[in-house]
Length: 89
Length: 265
Image 1 (cartoon, one colour):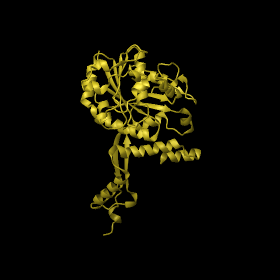
Image 2: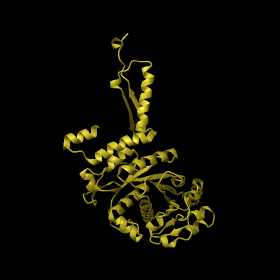
Image 3: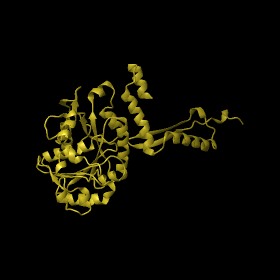
Image 4: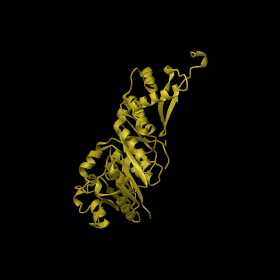
C-alpha cells in the first residue's frame, strides 16, 4: 500500500492512523457496492473463465480492482493478452 | 416564514447526535431564531435529559402523532432562551409507533411557525432513521474520527442519498488534536477525504460536554468551552455565515482563527 510504504521509508514506523485510513478506504469500497472481498475473488474467477474462452490471457499479470472516487465506484480489470507468436498451435 | 427542517443522524450510536441537536438548537435560538427540537429516538429518549428539560414532560411525540394531544401541548419551552422548544420522544413505545408520513405531517404543521426544526435521529438504519429523515430539508451526519464510526457514517450517507435527502453535510465530533499530532487519530481531512461529503463543522473532544450533560445545560449556553464555540460556529454556518474553521493547539483549545476555508456556505 502506497501510504504505508511512504510512512515506513520516512519514519521507519507506521502511524496507526494511516493504517486506519487505508483499511477504511478498502472497507468502504466493498461496503458501497455490497460486494465482499470474498465475492470479488469469485467475480475475478468468473471473469477469467469468460475471457479465457475468447483470448489467451497472461494469468500472472491479471489485475482486477475496485476503486472509489468521490463516492463513485468503479471495477477496473486488465487482462494482458498473450500475442499470437507465443501461442502454441 | 417557512422553516428549515434539519435532521441530525450518524448510523453509529454514541457519536454525539443528541449533544449536537441540543447545542445547535440552543445556538440557533441564541441567534434569535425560533427553534423546535424533536427527539425521534422513541423508546430511548435522551434529548430531554441533555437539554435539562426532563422534569417538564407531559406529552410526547407519540401522543401528538396519535392525536391524544395538540402539538402545542407536547412542546416544552426552554426558559433560558427566547424561542426554543422541545418535543420529547416517548419512552415506553418503540420506533414503529410513528411512521415517516407522521413525521412529514408534523414538520409541515411546524414550518409556518418556526425558523428551524431540528430532528434528533436514533442510531441505526431502520424505521427510526427513516422517520427522522423523512421530513428533512437537509441532513447533518455526525461522526467521530474512528474507523467504526466513519464506516457507519458512510452507510448512512448512502442511505440519505437513497432517500433523496442528500447530499448530507458532515460534522466531525470529538477530535483530539493531541492524538492527531501523534499520528494516532484520523484528522479531519482524512475523514472528509474518505467520506467525500462537505464538512460543516469540527468539534473538539471536550470534558465540558459531560459536565454540561450532568447539569442539563447545553455547552453553548455556558460561555467558554471549546466544544460550545464549535457548535456556535456550526449554527452560524447553518444561517448562511461563512465562518472559518478554527485552529486547534495541542490541548484542543483555539489559538487563532485561520482563514482557510474548507467549504463555503
